[in-house]
Length: 87
Image (cartoon, rainbow, N blue to C red):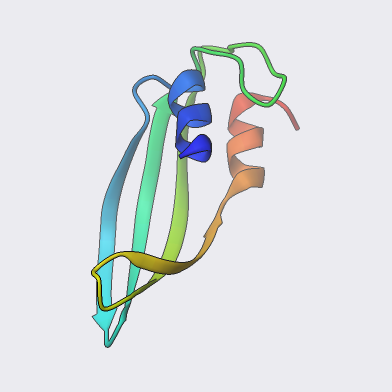
């Protein structure tokens, strides 16, 4: 939750739109496009007003209770920082 609170604070219009969802056994994979406009402080960087549009992939393993028990994820952090003008 802390992760998403940080993003929503910096990008109040933060959205994750699924591009692909694949399910096999107890695992699901989601490829998403994350977008938003940088309106608040983020990782020590003041708001820039710039938009972001980055790709992410998440793999989740669900338990018998229907909850996620393991998660692995990657996203284009470098691309996001370039779009914000940080690098």
